[in-house]
Image (tube, rainbow, N blue to C red; front, side):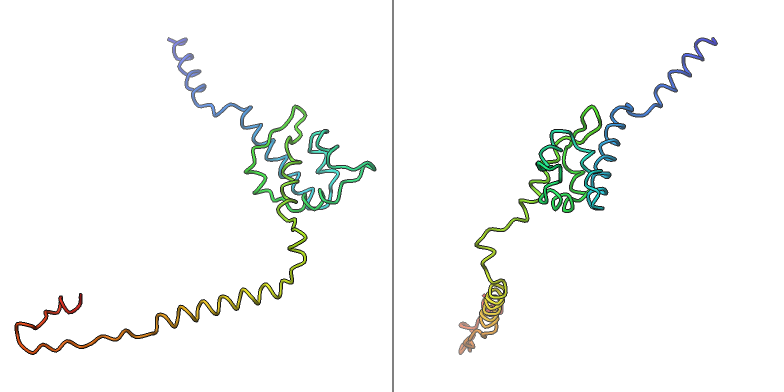
Length: 169
């Protein structure tokens, strides 16, 4: 009887355990690494942020003198933790983030403008946009304020009289 009670107690304790610890620890470790990367890079501690990346990615980010390339500094300041947490990063065996360089390249690519865009005078573009909007609203206002002319129906005999439903059609 004691053996049965002991077995039942062990069974109950085993069924109350949570999810496997390795999955939780990997998710927490990745989240901690992403938060550390974001905080370090936005505090201009780029060497601390680089320490969280794989060696291969560190080599892509630094130049020949061992300094971080300026475009990557800008990208590191642009990325937000909320955006990084949506990307399926992985950690290597040393706990370093794998796949950050393409994300940083993409962050810079979104903010690059073409030579044509640089040559535009934005004040003229904004004025032209406002003029088109004013003209479009004036056109739509004049179309809706024009009253429709309806000829009154005056029946002369009861047979030709229209009912209200016929008149409204």
